[in-house]
Image 1 (cartoon, rainbow, N blue to C red):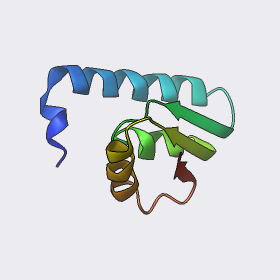
Image 2: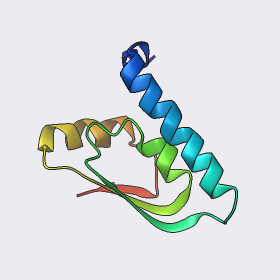
Image 3: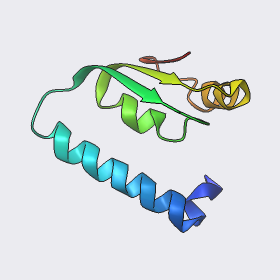
Length: 81
């Protein structure tokens, strides 16, 4: 369980992003490449990676990237910079 979902602001953003991905992805095949600027702790990356062939998550905070790598370890089409 991700306790962030208990916070309305996080949950609202997550639901908004998920809805937009479903809306735009339904009109075309998966995107070749995706870029998540400001990926933070990688909370959205597993979901984003399911809509593209290759996703790059980028953040200036190395601790957040270490958390994101651990959280999304099994996602083969995702890498961090």
